[in-house]
Figure 1 (cartoon, rainbow, N blue to C red):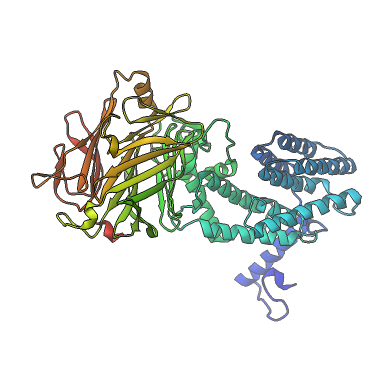
Figure 2: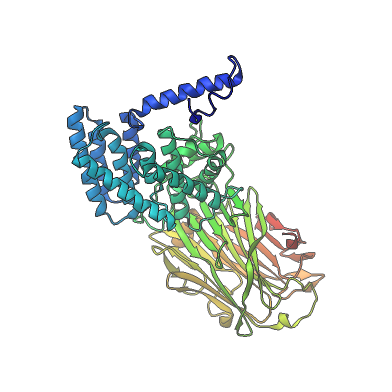
Length: 611
C-alpha cells in the first residue's frame, strides 16, 4: 500500500469491521478500478459514444464551416467499426489533417475547439503501446499547442482552458500534459472565484463575454465528469451553478443569445442550457419555457409561477440583470457599473437594441464637473410590476450624480434617468450652486443594424431595422421641435443616441423613456393618426405653491391608449401633489387608469443616505 490511498500502511493496524476499515477497502476498490480503466499507460479509456458526443458538441460550437466539416469527418471515423491497425492509421492521418485545417482558421475560438476535438479523437486512434513517426508527430503537435495555451493563460487568455484540461486528463502519461491539466484547473477556480459574486452576479461587462465565459466553465466541468477526474471544489461548483442561473437571464427568444443583427455570430450556449436543464427544478423549468415555450406539464399557456425570478442584483460584482418575463418578446436589461462609464444593454426579444458604455458629462457655468470616487448602489427594488436600480457618484462642488434604470415589466418600457442633486440642501435652502447653469450630455450606443428615424415635427425617435424596435422620448424636453430650442435635443451622433439638456439651475433631471413593446410600436408606426404618442411636463405643488423644475418634476406619458405618470424630487421627499396624485416619495412611477387615478407601480420612499 502507499499513501495515495488516503491512509498510511505499516504504522497503524486497522481493525476489521470499523468505519476506517471500510474506507480502506473502498479506497482499494476505487484505485483498482481506475487502474483497470486507465490501462497500462495510465490513460483513461472512453467508449465510442461518449467520444462522439464530445466531438459533436464541439462541432456545434464552431463558427467556420471548414472546421465543422473537419470535425464531422472525425465523428464519422470514430463511429466506424474496423480493425485496430486500419483505424489507427486512418485516424492519425485524419487528425493530422484537422491540425492542418486548424492552422488556417481565422477564429481563435474555433482553433481551440478543433484542437480539443483532435484530443478526443486521439483517445480512439492513438495506439495503446508502441509509437511510430506519425504518432510522435501528432503528440508533439498537441504538446506544442498545449504550451501555447499555457502561455495564453499567463497572459489572461482563457479560451484554451478546456483543451488543456482534456489533454492533461486524457493523456497524463505524456510529458507536460499533467501540468496542463493542473494549470487549467487552477485557472478555472481562479476565474470563477474572481468573477462570480455571492449573490450570483458575474463581474464581466458584456453579455456576449459572460455567456462565452460561463459556457467555457461548464464545458470544463463536463470534461472533468466525462473523464472521471478529480471533482471540483464544492464552492467552485456552487458558483458555476449560480453563473448558469445568471446566464439564463441573459438569453433571448428560444434560449438564444440576443444579437444586434441576424448575421452576427452568436456565442454557443449549449453547455449552459444542458447544465440549466439538469439543475434545480426552477432553473430547469425556466429553460424549458425559454427554449420550448411551455411549462413542465406541456402547457403552452403557462404562467411565471414555478419559474426563476426575472431579476438579479449582485452588489459585490456591481451588476444587475432584469427582464419583463420569460415569454418570447420579453425586454431584458443588463447594467454593470464597475467602470467609470456604466455598461448598459437593452434587448427586445432576440434583438440587442442598445449595447455599450452609457456616457455622461456634466458642466456647470461652462466648466466640466469632475467625478470623485466610484459608483455605488443607492437603491434596488424589484416587484411584480417594476424593477428599479439607482447608482450614484459624487461630483466636485458638493453635487452628486444619480443614474437610474427602471423597467416596467408588463409594459416593456425602460426609463433611464440622470439627476444632478445637492444632497446637503433641503427644501427652501439657498446656495450659489442652485443658480449655476447646468448642461447635461448623455449618450447610448445603439446596435449598428438599427437606424435612428427621427420624427419631423416632434422630438421622439424610432429605432428601426426593418421593423420598429424602440421608441425614445425625452420627457424633460418640449414635444415639438420648434419649442424651447435652447433647452436641449435628442439627436444621433454616429452610432450613439445623444440626449442634451440644459437648465438655468444647479439641479437637473433628464429622463429618457424607451418603449420596447413590439405590438404598441407597430400600431404607432402604421397608424399614427389613430394611435397618439405624447408627453407633457406637469405642475408639482408643495403647500399650495408651484415648485420650480430644479425642486421636483413630474410627467404624463401617453402611447396609444396607455398612459403613465412619473415623478422625481430633486431636493427632498415632501408631501406634494401632481395630476391629483399625492405623494411623499423621492421617485414614483404609475399607470393612469381610465378614471384618471394613478395606480402606483413603484415608489422610492426611504432615505437614500442609508445605502
